[in-house]
Length: 105
Image (cartoon, rainbow, N blue to C red; front, side, top):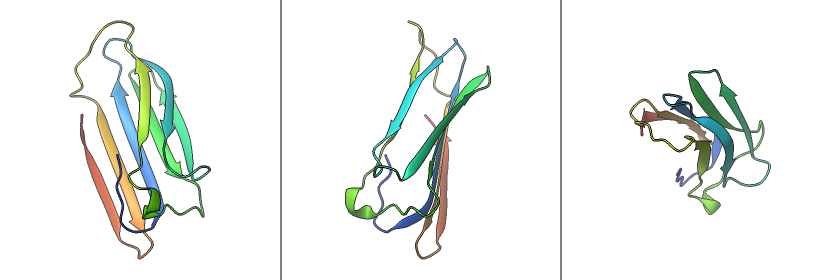
């Protein structure tokens, strides 16, 4: 969940899921304003990388905050530790302030 109190001009969210037990990509979605974010994923065999990036020229306002970016996957009936799964959020505000946040699930 991303909460903002000012207008954002650059947003990039990345979630990396380790494929310890063979996780499989099943989808991704977000609650940002329609048409404001592009979504992509890559499965490189060892991990699934989900990326959301705002479309060039599109701003993200605080009026519909908080926003969500959701990575969906299937563990095929098993479980796996989440300690290797990571997220990174990079934002730039309309005033030029840049912030980055990253961590583990």
